[in-house]
Structures are given as C-alpha cells and as structure tokens.
Amino acid sequence: MPLDNSPTRFVILGGTGKIGTAVAAHLSHRISTLSSLQQQQQPIIPQCEIVLVGRKPLSSEGNNDDYFQGVLREIKHLLDLSSSDEDDVEITSSLVLPEITYECITDIWQPGALDHILRGSSNSSTTSSRSTNTPPPVSCVIHTAGPYADREGPIVLDACLKHNIPVYVDVSDPIDFLNESLERHDTAIDSGTTAILAAGAFPGMSNVLALEAAAKASTNEGKETENNNNDDEEVKIKDVRFNYFTKGLGGSGTINLYITNIGFGDPMVMYNQGKLTKFGDLSGRLLGTVDFFINEQKTNTNTAASWHKANARAKERVGTQKVFAWPFPECATVPSELGIIGSSSSAMGTAPDLWNDMLGLLVDLVPRNWWRSKKFSKLLADFSEPLVLVTDFVMRNLSSKNGGDGNCGETHAMRVDVVTRKNNNDKSTDETMVSIVQCHDSFRWCVGQSCAEFALDAWLEYLQGQQSDDTTKKRKTGVYLPEQRYRDPADRKRILSRLTSTPGTFCYTGPVNVAFSRSSIQANKSSIKDSEADRTTKRQLLPVYPTQIRAIVQAMKNN
Image (cartoon, rainbow, N blue to C red; front, side):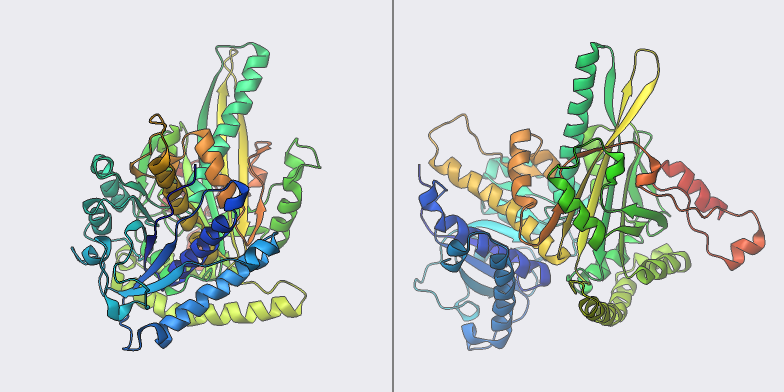
C-alpha cells in the first residue's frame, strides 16, 4: 500500500553547523532517491521540507541572504559527493530535492523557544519563500545543536513530547543527559513519539555494531556447543572494546575540540570485572596502539571473503594508530545491554600523531577541574583550531603531491571488539573474539549520514504505521538508545544495511572471527620504572591496552 503523500517537515536544530548541514544533505539525497524509486516497489515519500534552525538572524532579503546561500552551497557540495558515489547515475541525475528553509532561534535551550515551529507556524522573515502560507506539520526533529553537557535537562525532547512530534533524534553523549532523557520513556509512549538518543557515528552506529558483533560471537559459540552436545557449557559476553580514529578535526570544527577537552575532565564510566565503575583519572591517558583493520592471519575465513578488499583499504588508509582513553557513553550503556562479565573500554586517536602526544602531555600537566571548566576548554579549543587546520591543510597537500587521496583532516575509522567466554565441563574456559571495522572518508559526513539514517528509519516506520491495517505491527514509541531500539536482529540488519553503505564509506568488514590474541590490539611496551630520576625526566606511558583496567589504574598510581 502506498504511503501517505501529504507534506511534512524535518526540523534540524543546529542545521547550519558542520553536522547539521551533513544531516540535511543526506536527508535530501535519501528522500529524493526513495521518491524516484517509487515505481520499483519502494515507499512513496511525501513532499518534504527541511527546516534548518540556526542562531544567526537573516537580512531582510530572506532567501537571498549571503549566509543562508552559503549554507545551501555547502549542502549542495555534500549532495554532489553523495551523487558521485551512487551506482545508478540515471536516478541521481533526475532527483527532485526537498525544499530547504531557515528559521532563526537564538537559544533553542530556552523553554518554549521551539513552540512556534513545533505547532506548525513559522517566522516568514527568516524562511525562504513558500507557495503556501501554512507550513506542513513537523514529523521529525533532529537535534545536532550540541554540546549537551551542563544543560538544564532534555528541554528539546520535552518540547517534542509536548507537541506530539512523531520522531525525535539527537547526537547527545553525556551519560547524565542520556539517563535523564531515558526517564521520559513512558511520556514518549503516551505522546506517540519515537526518540532515539546518541544517534550519530560514535556513539550511534558503534552501539549497533557492538550488538551485531555480540550476536555473531554468541551464534558461533552456540553452534560449537550444539555440535559437541555439551549442554552444560555456558557462553557469556566478557569484554566490549570501542576504538575510534579521526584525522584532524574530522571536518567537524571547533565544537569537536571543545567536546574533547571537556571530556578530559570527566571520569571514565566503564565496566570492570562485570561492575560499572568510575575512574576519575583515566580520561585522556595514552593507552597504546590499535589496528584499525583485521589481521587476516588471525582469522579462519576464506581469503575470497567479501570483506578482505575493504579491509585492505582500511589497512592502507588508516593502519595502526595510537589512542587515548575518552569517556564515550557506549562504554557504559552497551555493556549494560549485553550483560558483560568482564571489562569495557573506549578510546580514540587522531592524526598526525603529534596531536596525540600533545594531548597526552596536557592531560598530565593540566588539573582535571580545569578541563571541566567550560571557559578553559573553549579557550583551548579556539587556540588549537587554527593550528589543527593549518596542519590538516599541509598534510592534505603533501598527501596529494605524493600520490595519495589528499583527504587528511577528515578520515574516520572505528573498530569494535567483543570477547566471549565459554565455561567448559572440564572447568576450563575458552575465549574468542569477534571484531568489526568501519571506515569513512569524513567523520563529519559519517556522523551526519548516520543521524539522518536513524531518523529516516523511525520516520518510515511511522509512515508505514499510519497506513498499515495490521494492528499487530505497532510502532516502537518511547525513548531509546541505539542498542535498545535495534535489539531485534531484523531491525538491526535493516539499519546496518543503511549505515554501512552510505556514500564515502570505504570499509565495512562485518563481524569477523579473530583468534583471541593481544597482538591484534598491541600493547605499549613502555614499563613503569621505579627510578625517581626516570619518573621526573621521562613521561611514563601506560602499560598493556586494553586488558584489565585495574592494571592501568595501578600503573597510574605508581607513576
């Protein structure tokens, strides 16, 4: 049955920023592509408007304002990149794009600030001209106007629940903010709202990848148990590890530096021996190096497996990178969902490697309460941005001159590892690991695409629910983290097929069985010296990563 063809609006808060424009571009691309495929038994997509909400007032010229036109050019640039990656040129060349308009709201965090948009009215002085006086209803609000730390609760989500907005998606990451938002679950069900939190690349896609790796690991173990007819053998998820890499700023601007700096002041909230634990002095500590590719010698797969070519690209373009601990929320929320019995860890790195060493040194020297200061972290971010941009520019040009792709400054990669433990009847234990690697040309682009795909998935479910006569197919209203919404294998397969095939993705291995060995995640060989002279003259690096967090904390105390 065709879906409702009535007009609707997507509202993107922070829509003129780096992430917001990436969301708008991918939404335009996907909505237009789906509309053009309606003759191929695809859902009919309604006429859509995308509303970009920003803080800058436009001139009296409205649609011709230079600022707004600059935003539209940026979106068109991303659209051109999307179309160039598409296989079906005929479809992309005939796309009819949604209308894109602009609304100015100086502070979306003020209660009531969004009411006029969410109830279906608009400020004519700040939007592009429309053929009708009454705008269509808002079906989806996408909140990219971070940072979310130190805000007075989920004010935007509350506004969406108040106005019964069908879909709400954000890219929030502070754990306290997420927990407070999740408390609105019952209210969201009553309002008919589907809300997905932390729905970017990491957190977001990474959460779903961890569930997929855990499912693969459990299935593998289950088959082995069945074949051996050992019904008493028990398989459990032991460890979950999240490792991320972004060259330079990843295209996301000063806000990414600021959020990273603030995080250095936060405790690492993670699992240690099956218990959720806070480590106050761990964030920002250099841990060691990570292979952002699968060591194929450690796998038992056929060399013709489809992921090998993608894996080779990841090895060439990203390779092995140094990482430091950072308090990503999925390090706490995903292990809770999986019920792990061991430890979790989350870390990230950047390039060139000089930045990792500089950040590690700063974390050693600067008191934690300074990092928690918004004024200090913002000042340091503003000071660092020109240096990072210049470095990115130089390295991008060097890469191009040396025959490379010249994309330094935005390349993104993540590796998710899940370790399972099987207790055998003879009291012995076996541990196995399943790993997934995903890489993209641009961190900023990947976050925007992922956020847009999460929103589209919930919106299409809403449209199908509106038209379906099957009362058993109920829409999943409520407030969810990605790992909660995509517990079901069919749902997870659907969203992963979209998240991992977006334009710019150059590697997705899928879940791969890896021989359990520390060599695939290499330890830093530096040891903690007892000599007072060594402690004062040489900055000590932390030992093996990632094994037991207790060992890392003890090494920090010794240092």
